[in-house]
Amino acid sequence: GESVGLHLPTLSVQEGDNSIINCAYSNSASDYFIWYKQESGKGPQFIIDIRSNMDKRQGQRVTVLLNKTVKHLSLQIAATQPGDSAVYFCAERKEAGNMLTFGGGTRLMVKP
Amino acid sequence: DTGVSQDPRHKITKRGQNVTFRCDPISEHNRLYWYRQTLGQGPEFLTYFQNEAQLEKSRLLSDRFSAERPKGSFSTLEIQRTEQGDSAMYLCASSPGRADGYTFGSGTRLTVV
Image 1 (cartoon, rainbow over the protein chains, first blue to last red):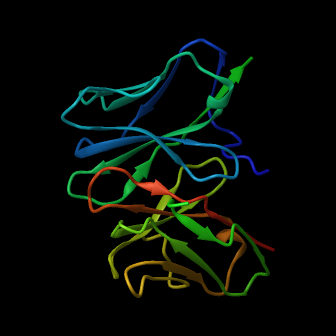
Image 2 (cartoon, each protein chain N blue to C red):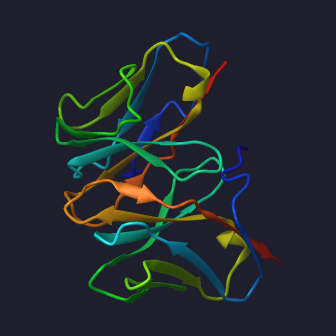
């Protein structure tokens, strides 16, 4: 199948370890942020989102942290599994805007 | 399956030909978006519909590109006189108003030879 992200930054972790994927966003006026997971040949899959009035949000095995002071977003995956291997993108939406602007993506490789 | 559907999944065309892609959004979503993704990059916004109205268009959407959503349900994206630089994954997404939760389809992979 096709490969998403041939030359992306890569994070390699051992199965069972925690993963942290970072993203620097561009617009201080952005009010909404989403993390997506993308596997080869598939569209982006929603993982977790956060609004700008929050600094942390937790889901099942995932946590998103937002630091508006330095315009930084992170995705933490607990107990990383082989099925988590994919390319991860952060996306931001400007306040009063409609479309998402995506970051460059990080490839996560999970070693069994 | 109640997700976003895109057709076809793959399209190979010769340079200069016209191609058309279809997107069926989640039925209760009134907003529909088209994005383009090239290898190694995140998706880039092309255009956005609210119901049948096309409200935003990116500078990436040249005159050779046209998108429609005639009844506020499915949408089509047509590329005329395709060029090799048009080769990419074309993604459709939908959302329920400006609320959270943009859901993407699996995309149409276009290869122009």
